[in-house]
Each structure stands twice: as structure tokens, then as C-alpha cells.
Image (cartoon, rainbow, N blue to C red; front, top):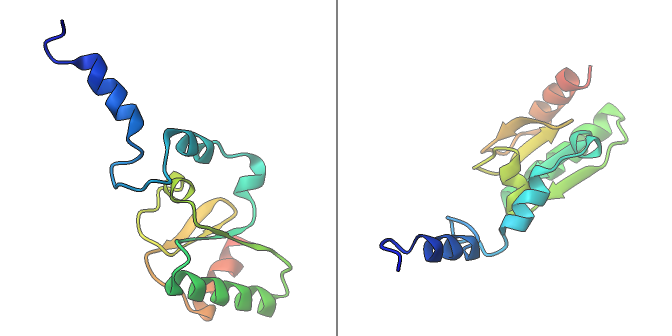
Amino acid sequence: MSIFNFRKNKAAEKKESCCCGAKSVTPESMEKAEFKTASDTSGIKVLGSGCAKCQALEKAVVEALTELGMDTAVDHVTDFAQIASYGVMTTPALVVDGKVVSYGHVLTKDEVLKILKTARQ
């Protein structure tokens, strides 16, 4: 007999997916998101759920890339476990070559241009 039901509580913890209640975040998806390879760190990523603000940021990024003549694909990451692996808690966020360069607000095309010129030189 256990006084504090330690083993029972540990089993219950593993079944819960996330403290925020997100059902898509599981220990397995967190482990997968935390494992980054070299290919994950290169390129440009927009982090967000796919809302209007995230789409507006993605549009500004695509316009800036077109203006700069860069042929770079923009990945839109919607998995909250992957977003959390970048340390981002507010979206939309912009990641350039594995580094979070902006989060929490929608950048304009001109702001993205400035960031890309700085990050890619």
C-alpha cells in the first residue's frame, strides 16, 4: 500500500498530453519536435496555427523573398510541439536558418526585407 499513490500519479501524468490541454501534443510528438537535424535549421519557417495573422506573415515573407530574388521555400509549421521546440509561446513567429527572428506580431514586407538582408549576409 502506497501512502501517496506515487506510481498511480506517474501513470496518470504520462497519459495527459499537455498542460495547456492541446490534444495533438503528446510526449512522442514533443520528442520528435525536439530532435532537429541540420536540414531543419536551414530555410525559412513561419510558425503559427494557420490563422489570418500567420497567413499575413507568410504572404509578407513570400513577397520579400520575391523582391530579393531568393528562391527559398517557406515552410508553415502548425504543429504546436514543433512550435514549442523553438521556444515560441506567441505566434505568428518567423524562423530564419534555425533562429527565431520575430514572434508575436505580423511583420510588414519591409520589416521582413530588413531581417532577411541582415540574416542572409
